[in-house]
Each structure stands twice: as C-alpha cells, then as structure tokens.
Image (cartoon, rainbow, N blue to C red; front, side, top):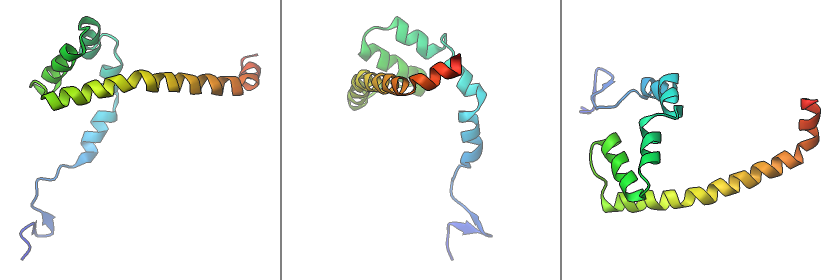
Amino acid sequence: MNNHHYHGRSNSNDVNLGPVMALMSGPTVGDAISDPNNAIARLTSELKQDHQLIEALFLRILNRKPTSQEVNAALASMASIDGEHSELEAAWAAKEAEQKLVIEKAEA
C-alpha cells in the first residue's frame, strides 16, 4: 500500500497555495509594499552601506543574519539593477517617441 495516501488524500505536508497567493497578490501586501514610508523604504534611506542594508533586511524579514554567499548574491543583484533600470528607461523613451503622434492626439 502506498504510504503517501490514505483514503485518496495525500498524507504529505503540502500547502494549499491558493490562499497564500491571494494574500500575497491582494491589497494588504500591495499597499504595504507600495507605501513610501514602509520599513524597507525607511531602511534603504537610513542605511547607505549595502552590506548594512542587506543585513538589516535579512534580520527584519528572515530574523537572521545573511550568510556571506547570500550577501554576495544580494550585492550582485543590486549591482545589476542600475543597468536594467537604464535599459528600461531607454526602451520607454523609444516607445514614447514611436507613439508620440498617438499620444499627442489622445491628449488634445
């Protein structure tokens, strides 16, 4: 007999992700993240050293200090943000230029 099923039900510790995803994509989390005065926004404005910010975020979110591997991964991710942001701004400007006449007509 399969030990993982009992009367057609799974015996594992599977989590039903529906309610979790609804919470994460709902207005409560969205409002908290987009609030310019949230704890993460305050930390980023108060802590100017990336290492300090990473450690503070780990302590705040995961209740532990990051490993050196996690710090390095976070630093690499942070370093790539400026380049990606510049690429997105350039793409946006190109799209606006492409759509300039349509935008002008819509705004008239």
